[in-house]
Length: 435
Image (cartoon, rainbow, N blue to C red):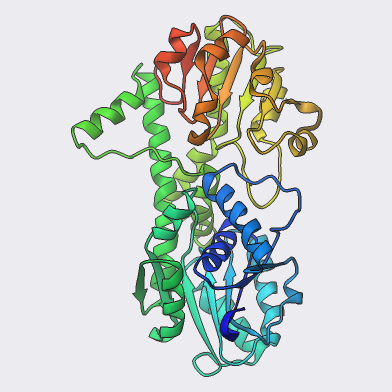
């Protein structure tokens, strides 16, 4: 650790990983406590995470980052900045987090700066973090320690975009340590300071909630476009050209968008709670069934029944509910299997071995894209934009059954190129299927 200044980052989410590598990149060595070792996990194939994991390997070798799987092994007497990174989005997560804080508190040294970085309901930092540290650590806020809050949230962007987004920092009772500010400014170029922790908590939560509401609106508008036989992409393009304000499609991770609404809904009564937020959450939960219905209609358009038709899934973007916290099989595989489809999965560049163990006998897993699409009647594209160069409409048409259909969830293919190759092209919001 540099100049006797020790930093420890504790968390099991992407934000903890990103914080650790950005601190190291800024020349601040740190302990990283969490599941970031060689644990065989399959993380979301996203540029931000891929780059962060690559940097983690470099900084681990150089000694800038020391990975500690268990927080009990932290030398707390040496730690001067402790960052706790999590999202209080479910009872299990909040219970685990509060137990971590309770176990860490007795070992904290006087003068430690503590920061909670994540999403939570307003006043959670006070009721859970502050009270637990004071009760079980015997430290008095403002006397023996400093406490800060950052509504930190990674929404799928690149590591550079995550770094350059303006960050909010709140100090307890309006007290903001200049030393901690200087430390953060070495990591993040811009900080907005607020003297009220509750306002910062609401700011982070409402921002995340608004993203899911916007996504739900996008899905509803796309469904309306399908009903009217209109291409939603063309509507968006016209709105951009004429500067008409409309919800913009993002490249973020849908499964992480529900974190904010889960917190918001858990902290309110159903009768008097936020109805729009609840409705948006419900609409987004139906995204998987919309995909299955689109596949059914695409197969029908090509003259195939669902049963015994070969469906190939390329990538897993937007198809996993827990892409970070634990490896899992995409739920869509089970939905397609129940309808009798024969499924092949090409997971992308993450490798086929862990996926073969996860999906078991429910699907065939291929490490070759062309082998995966061979003889497929329908190909579901869920690859990130960064993988677009690996897809060629002519090659897909050569390998697939004819007639064949492409369901492009991430819109990495040009519809005109696919149709020129003799394949049927569709995506959510493209009004070209009979409903």
